[in-house]
Image 1 (tube, rainbow, N blue to C red):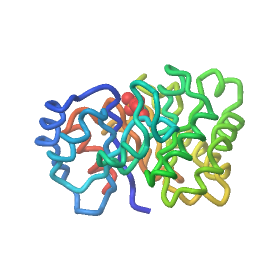
Image 2: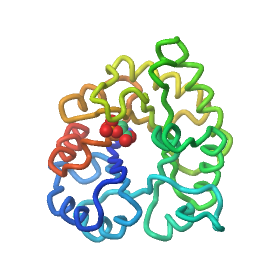
Image 3: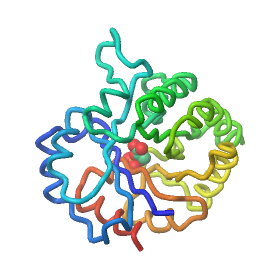
Image 4: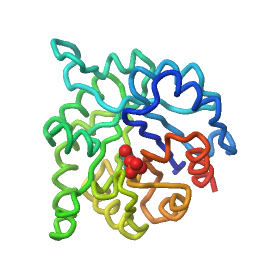
Amino acid sequence: MTRVVAGNWKMHHGPRATRQFFSDFNPDVRPGAVRVAFFPPDVSLRAARESVRILVEFGVQHIHWEDSGAFTGETSAGMAKDAGASLALIGHSERRHVFGETDREVGLKVEAAARAGLVPVVCVGELLEERKAGRLERVLRRQVAAFTAPLGQCDRYLVAYEPVWAIGTGETATPADASEAHAIVRSALGELGGCPILYGGSVKPANAAALMSAPDVDGVLVGGASLDARVFARIVEAAAT
Ligand code: PEP
């Protein structure tokens, strides 16, 4: 499976910073050796598409589950597609834990992505207290069960395992931790489990190669280390080797 390296910019890089990023982003990889994707803020999507110099995919960080309506501040899957996105992050831990997104909403958003023809990248992951209480498998199976039915309506999809305790904290799961969780996610997906499963949580150039060499880890979803073009290029290059 071709490895995937995706950058989630969160609320960083407006249009001007986005153009600067892509003028500096030039990873030394053969075309097609790695699937590279970016999730810029919606307002920077156009600048990203206009200034990128290599073949990459673009996605949005968040969609609403309705196709249109009186939902101030929201963007629908169809609108994201129309603006040039092909992917949508769904259920990122910041959406779940900062904005209170529920498993049910995650399922509805996967359904909305399927309707619009957007490829969902659905995120799952446990809190530190859940891991410490031995509930890793139960939490992952519950989160996955909430979106398997709509996932079956999508032509393409990805899943990301992102332990909440490793996101933006500098703490990284070991390659063995990541493999164990990915195997649980794959098994919970059942017959839908042939998709790429990405690891996310404080991935950096120094740990990317080891994580991507772990069994069942098909790529990485990178937050902080995707904001610097040269640093992110090193992660893309690590995926190509
Ligand atoms: C993320 O935002 O999905 C993420 C994994 O962030 P970080 O790499 O900064 O931990």
